[in-house]
Structures are given as structure tokens and as C-alpha cells.
Length: 381
Ligand SMILES: NC(=O)c1ccc[n+]([C@@H]2O[C@H](COP(=O)([O-])OP(=O)(O)OC[C@H]3O[C@@H](n4cnc5c(N)ncnc54)[C@H](O)[C@@H]3O)[C@@H](O)[C@H]2O)c1
Image 1: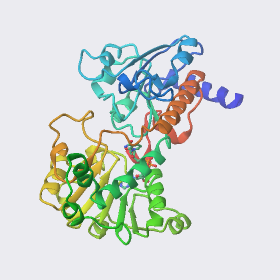
Image 2: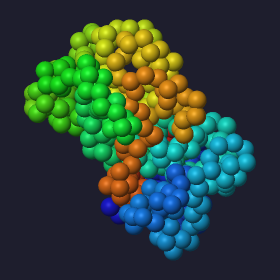
Image 3: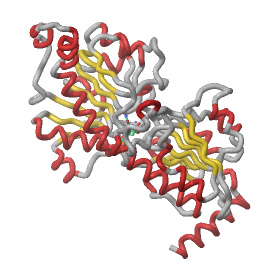
């Protein structure tokens, strides 16, 4: 370890003299840093659970630790516009931590203003709220807590599939509203068994979902830019589809599990949705902007999509008049699947670990990097 640190410190001093644009995090041990955390507000719920660390008040549970080391830690939910607390703290911030649930949109313009910024950490998974190319060009490291909430999201996707296929929500609303109309639910409620479920993206979350679906005796398909190892494919029991357009018409249920990248932004537009089977159910906990917002609302209205559920929107928080709030047959929620208490404890620990390594000048676990030394992780290129 000592040798590795000495080597990386030699590399850093070389970088600082020759290629400082590729790596701003040239760290001097003992230096005091300004860290800005952008999280959702806990309000009246903040004190109800000591493990509720993901909110502004919980501050990832790292305030004492950071301040005891002489660092300044500003935590806020105020992230939009030129007068926001985030914007007011940009110019001298060294580190910004944000979550996908209440994302600090770190645009090229904000990166330009943040002259001291070394590190952007995502408390969770998915760093599409950051202009990754601008971060790379400015020599800023971007990293997330890879794997931290994948179980949380896969479980939630299974829940959403079942909610849609059993037409659960209209039944719940009847119960609340004092109604009793079995036909109103039963005419479009089905078993999951025997249906074809396809995941677009079979990385960490996609694989966990497929494993959870196996006991339901569905036909499982997946499309990904990378094929799984044949042994794993056999164990999971899912068939690889080389072409997305060939998989879509086969699926009764489609689940989106890719990151939001230049390749996947707006992927599910009117044309792509028209390739899906009439009456398809779509679950998307990946990112709202993978879908064309209006195309989804139109397809739910005309019945081509029989149900749409997910927790991701664009932008977030979603505006009051977002078309998905009022489209028929949806089961949308605010962005919650990856922020269970278990997930919060995992991503808070992951953030603390990366900050600790950053202060010591050590590398992060390789899978956490989204931008490292001017290079984007392969799936974001
Ligand atoms: N709703 C939430 O709370 C929540 C929480 C965690 C993650 N997410 C989202 O889920 C995404 C996936 O998370 P993960 O941990 O499974 O990531 P992962 O990196 O393990 O898996 C992503 C998979 O997508 C594939 N992929 C990428 N681009 C593709 C493309 N253009 N075409 C086909 N396949 C492509 C990759 O090869 C990989 O197998 C995250 O990037 C994030 O946007 C949401």
C-alpha cells in the first residue's frame, strides 16, 4: 500500500506539472476542504429514524467526522437557480455530493464557476445529473457508490411489475373510496406466470431482477451491449437478444435497466414504443429521460401501453403539470426505489469511504469511477 501511495503521489506530481487539466484532485494532506452536500429535506420525518441519513438533516451521518478533520460541510436541498445555496457555494467548493433522488444538476456552466472543484460524488448510482464531458475536460473526478442500492431497485421493479399486471392500484382506490367493483379490476388483471419479460440492460440491477423473476416461471429475455457469461445466463435462465427491436415485440413486460447516456437518452420514442406489443407494460426505474415523455403519455392514453410504472422523471422534482402525473394506467411514484434505509446506510458508508480515500490521496474502488483522469467510464462514452 505504501508503495502504491508513493507511486500514485509520483504520478500526481507528474500530472500536476504536465497535465493538470486531467486531474484537479492534487491533494495536500491536512488541507481543509469545502464539501457541499445536496440531498432531499427530511422535514418532520427527519427525527423519526436514527438511520434516516439520506436527508439534509441526516447529512449522510458524516458531519462530525468531516468537521473533526477541519473540513467545512454545507448541506442543503436548495439547488436550482442563481440564488440557490448550491450556486452560492459553488465558487470555492472542493467536493459536491449529490443524490439522484434530488439531483444537483452540475452543468458545464456550473463547472466553469466551480474553480476549486476536484470531486463530484453521487450518493447512489447514476451520475447523469452531471455534464460528464465538461467534468472530464475540467479534470474533475466523478464517482458513485456502485452496487449500493441495486437490491433495493430490483425488489422495487418486481413490485411494480406485479402492481401493473394485477391492476392493483384501481382496486386500492376502490377500497379507499368506499367502492366495490370487481369487474372494473378483473377485466385487465393477469398472472405473471407464463408471460414474457424483457430487460433492456442486464447489469447489476437487471441481473438481480432476472434472478428474482425466475421463480415466477416467466420467459425471460435481455438486451444489453454486453452478453453475460454463458454459465450465468444459464443459471439466471434468460435468453440474450442481439437486437432491441427484435426483443420488443415479444415482451408482455419491458423493464429499463440501462444508465442514461448519449445512446439511451430518448431511446423510447414514439417509433420504439410502436415496436412494442400492444398492451405492453413498462417499468422504468432507470432514468426518466430514457423515455420521450409525451410519447409515453400518448401511448398510455391510446392503450398501446397498458401500464407504465417507475420512480424516475425528468426533471426532478417533477413539475406539478408533468404529463405522467395524469396519464391513464400509471403507477408512478417520486424517486424512492434506491433510497430505502438499507440503501442509505450503504451509500452513506460508500461516500465516507471515498472521501477518506480522497483526503489520503488514494484511489477509489475501480468500479466506482464514472470520470477518472479525463476519461469517461466505457458505457458513458
Ligand atoms: N431508481 C433508482 O433509485 C436507481 C438506483 C440505482 C440505479 N438506477 C439506475 O439504473 C441504472 C443501472 O444501474 P446498474 O447498477 O444496473 O448499472 P450497471 O452499470 O451495473 O448496468 C448497466 C447495464 O446497462 C448496459 N448498457 C449501458 N448502455 C447500454 C446501451 N446503450 N445499450 C444496451 N445496454 C447498455 C451495460 O452494459 C450494463 O450491463 C443506473 O445507471 C441508474 O441510472 C436507478
